[in-house]
Image (cartoon, rainbow, N blue to C red; front, side):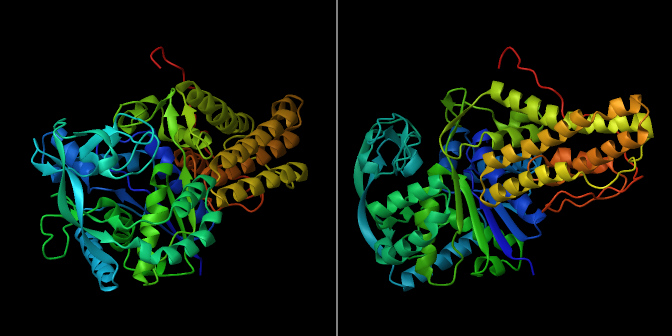
Length: 541
């Protein structure tokens, strides 16, 4: 039986339009890895969804003057459209505002309370006098106490990723009305006693963090150095999962107490066999996210899983990427800077974005992505190396041999040795989720194929009357096209589908361990339309 692989992509907030930062930050890395694992024959459950609770949805709904549920439904449909547009292969792209999620969180809270890990405390929270309400997290804005960013949120700074208490925010104001008439008032909240399980969490972290991406490991170990703090898990809000405790009828659970468990409730909706992933110690669990979510996935979620003492599967590989900037500025919903997904396909097909963003993935540092770079990658790699090779081989063969694959000979051993070296590099990089290295190896496979054709010059062999020699070269090129489909399938699925349609017979996309001949002599083929077209930089880009 194939080993089980559980793969989750961070759940984007459901407030506003999605952009290329969401693609490169969590969606594409997780999708590429899921497709690779399936090609390797593994049993995969790949889960994603929309994070609907907390203040982002409330603030967004207020700005658009609509009920919160209507607002979240509107943007969930946009999420689903983007998932389809960019060929994301989730087993289910769900959402957190469901009965399954509410039951799961209520059961979680009840178990933690029974284990003596919940405590009621009186706290002081920001209260907007003009709005007549307590302000939670994103309902409060101000100046970051760490870096001085003037549009920091009530609990976290989007500029430096620092987290802090609401009363530390400088010059606070209501994100709802803009009022600066803010008072700190007493209220009661429930706290998760993280300090009581710090020893178990620290032991777990030291075993797991060294296996994560460098960014994720560094951030998580920073929290280990600081130590765990008991965390407030309730908020004075009306939108979210209601607190199942008498006296807390007017509060909801903090969104980060709720959101990561969305992976589980979405899994429950996806398959009745969900426990064979989530309660299986032999399952391999990989999480994908931007660096600003590492705290919640390396601290909040696993500390709750460990505290439950109920055999929950914790993360094995935590892949976090840095920020992708666009034309020198941060990609963000709040500023409108960047390429937004509802417009991206007007610029180029989805495969172009998938490949170019993975080639530019900010895996070690924040990376600046420009339209010039995007166009250069598409034109050189996809149009030049991949698309042109496929087109040239098919057209030259059809012209001189008809639409059947010419007879070949034994595999070219020199070519095979070079290709096999790159397949091994590509496979190793994919296993480690090192996507830029993966693209480098993939590009070199394309390059070796083009180099082979250039050196062998089948057009010259035809001209000189050596049809057998030309046919053998073109047969080898068709074998390379088949290889292209297999190794490219995680990155450019639309192009790969077109490549598969070239051949009369069906050929699976199993991941290759070595270069091999799978296309039969005399197999029919069809000359395809161009896989890609050259892009041009317009005046306004």
